[in-house]
Amino acid sequence: MKINDEYTVKIEKITNLGLGLARIEGFVVFVENTCPEDIVKIKITKVNKNFANGKILEIITPSEHRVKPFCPMQKVCGACQLQFIDYDYQLELKRQIVEDTMKNIGNLDIEIPKPISSPQIKNYRHKIQYPISETKNSKRILAGYYKPATHEIVNIKYCPIQPEICDKIIEFIREKAFDFGISGYNEKKHSGDLRHVVIRSSLATGKNLVVLVINATKSFERLNDFAKCIFDEFYEVAGVCVNFNSKKTNVILGKKTECLAGKNFVKERILDKTFRIGPNTFFQINPKSAENIFRYVKDYIKDNFENPTVLDAYAGITSFGICISDICKKVVSVEENKESVELARETAEINNIPNLEIHNQDASVFFQKEKRKFDAIILDPPRKGCTKESLDNAVRLSKSIIYVSCNPATLARDLKYLKEEKNCTVKSIQPFDMFCHTYHIENVAIIEN
Image (cartoon, rainbow, N blue to C red; front, side):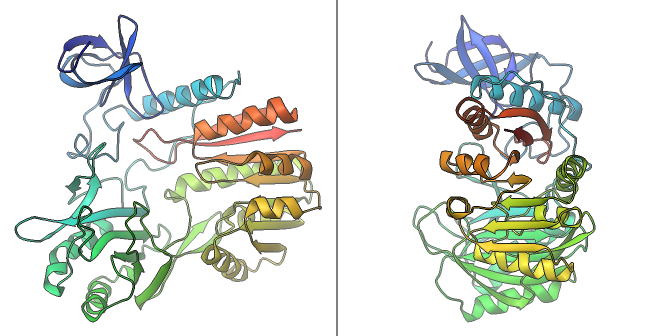
């Protein structure tokens, strides 16, 4: 097999990265934009020792689950890898991904139920992060998502998975940036002003927080004027902030943020609780699906414990802890991000929650020092999962662990460790579709020891 060879293949399954998997005489080939049961003619684009990559030349026999994407940019934009597959079958594919991952990485033979679907499958994404560059000749702003496996920006005028107001705000920024002398970022030269535009959009209020990520260390007059222009243009904009990121890095946000107009937060409502979301705040991008997860966790605690004391670790703005506070004797929250902790304290005050104890500390450090026992621990770590030391301490501190994960691979790894090294029992794993039309899937695992 070599590059540019052509083959006709049948797609067997979807991988955990959303690629179709086919075999040519037993050799694995990954093909983008394919669905199980597709029969396609492909051209080989890359050959490695254990696998190859190919691209579609022709769909000979389409899968019965293929549908027309509702976004015309689906093939060139890297955001919605599965949009050409009917939604119900997307859920089944994600169930299979979780099940395969638990078997192959976690050595877990556990039945995985169908993911709980998102209440919205369009306009669901309430955090938007657009990388910015500019056109070569006219020096006009380009804003959109990257083409798959590239840093080439697709200039997106309309995105059906986010609120329509976000399209209008981005288009206004495209049109007006040049007038204020705001240039787009050149990643290769590390030059230009505007690197990213981040929008936090509230489902509850319809208000939006606009964050301009600037390749600078301090603000300047034309940037201040531009921010005020955006704020004045849109009733729906609650505030405009500038985030300073002058480093050569792929990390979107720098450490310093200033509010240039309006407020530096928006409010969101989950399970009748009000949350403040700032520029750097970790909060689920799909509020309605997030509410399903919070309700699931709350129901589990309510059904299994009476007046419990619960530890909410890697807590962010303590969204889980705040949502369960009314059924708990006490909630102890641990989060290392200072901004999130400040917002959590404000949120607790807004919601009149007296039984919440908040710690601004790394979870692993807190675990090592803590001696109290908890009825249950909620773990909601970043994609990299938990350290073995944190898992050891979680088992030491509680007999019941609720593990919320956005990464099936690291969840499977950690569950394997808990089962094989700590003699824990994985009682259940429930997937939730937080990121419709993508290969991403959220899971809640219940573990007992």
